[in-house]
Image (cartoon, rainbow, N blue to C red; front, side, top):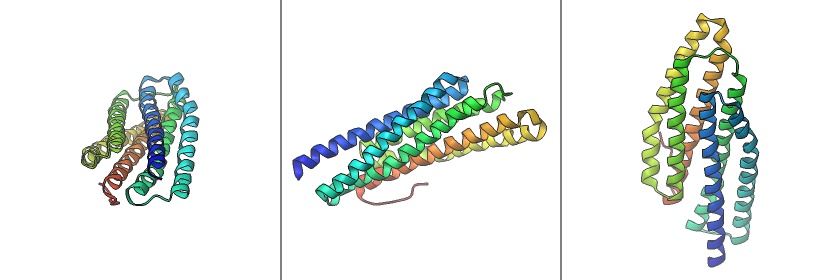
Length: 218
């Protein structure tokens, strides 16, 4: 089993990292599209989500097949199970990027609050950086980097969300015409927060990959 399995796991991990890159691009593009009011870029994110879903399904199927065919144990099993678990977090992060792209389309032509959008821009940048760091730590099986990433961004992302939510609710109370836009801001902030959560999950799977221990960060 040794050589054949090793070749299979290298291919599986390469597919996983490819998916990670695709989702990372979707997250970055969706956040930038919202800030730039870029409908075309948003539509591209939505269209590409189908490719993300297809690759996720393929990786899951191949992971199950490898477990059934090779019956790996200890470290080898951990590598397959880690990918099988983490790939779900990637796909869900991609779903939230798609949601942000849809919000960009929905808010088109509505009144905007530039101060809130500035905070969204900062949140999107930090969430994208957190995701990229999480994927890199997984690729390197670097548990120290995974722990540092989760710790660094936890409170930063939460503060961004609160800084978006408060003025959005205040704006809704003062001006009925801004309600739809404020709801979109809240939705985008929630989607970014969920992407952050999935990035933390990937950090947790990195620690599992490196140590075999399942822990909860933050």
